[in-house]
Image 1 (cartoon, rainbow, N blue to C red):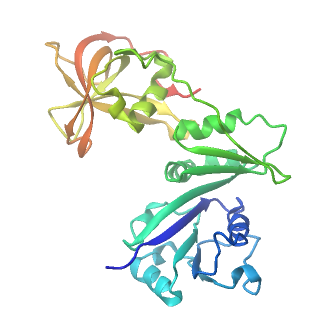
Image 2: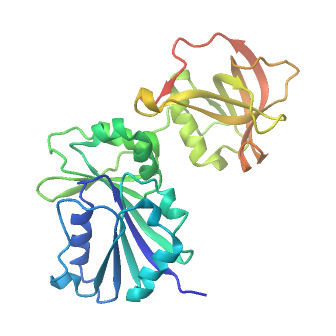
Image 3: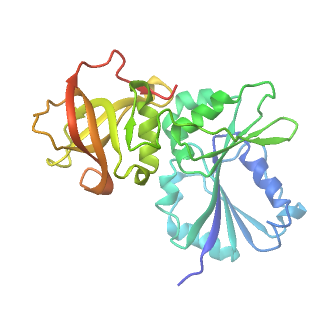
Amino acid sequence: MRREVPVYLITGFLESGKTRFIIDTLHDPQFNDGSSTLIIVCEQGEIEYEPDEKYMDSCHLEYITNEAELNPQLLTEMEDKYKATQILIEYNGMWPLSSLMDNKPAHWLIYQSMMFIDSTTYEAYNQMFRNLMVDKINNCELVIFNRVDPKRDTGLLHAMIRAVNRRRQICYEYPDGTTQYDDTVDELPFDFSKDDIYVDLEDYAVWYRDIAEDYSRYEGKKVHLTAEIVENRFTKEQLTIGRPVMTCCVADITFRGLMCENRTPKKLKMEHWYDVAATVVEKYSEGYGGLGPVLEITEINEVPKPANEVATFY
């Protein structure tokens, strides 16, 4: 059995500061202690590594410019070539992370994953490549906004990240090199301490994100909400209850729902809206392909479709 190798994954779009961060990290003797370090570069920007510099003495560069080259055999060969004890990957922002995760050697363990974002170009990338942006945010531990104007209100940056994933840490880096971690507490807009949780129309997106991230917290609680009931193509025993959700822009509107079971005698109409009271239980569902939160409906009444059926985080 091969020994485990720690992998440090650095993601972000072109010119977001990935290379500069890696070079700064390599100057730190606590990280770069003379052990063999493999650096896999998947895109090249304006800043380049300097092989003749002292910080590169025990570091080895390999370049992958084609997404199709990501395969376990090639990556293992790179590791063995240098007898690498740790690996840094500067990932191409235009490649989905699944291309790496599905093809990395089994003994490569992601120790840390960080995403770098240029705060001056974030909105443009977010509009054009929303799916790739969400992909990276959902698969990192820390989001670092750099080139942040000290006069800028970081509330919007905070909201954009937490709309995707409430558990991501956020750091702001300013032009003078100083940094500040975001310690904003995202309060839930409903009283979670009660056994009955009432989700207002405007709070559906926040509630859905919260239960999707950790549904075990809701086990046994009764949820009251207004949503649409639709058929689920995976199973006849369960339906889906949910709403269209917009994370950031119109282009990313997606129906977000949970599996549900009707425990009332009422016959439901598909693609109609209802006021629902349901108990959250963990059980197997073909709709999830495993265990997940199923809403057991105990009360249900049809209501008109709301004027704005799309739920948002703002």
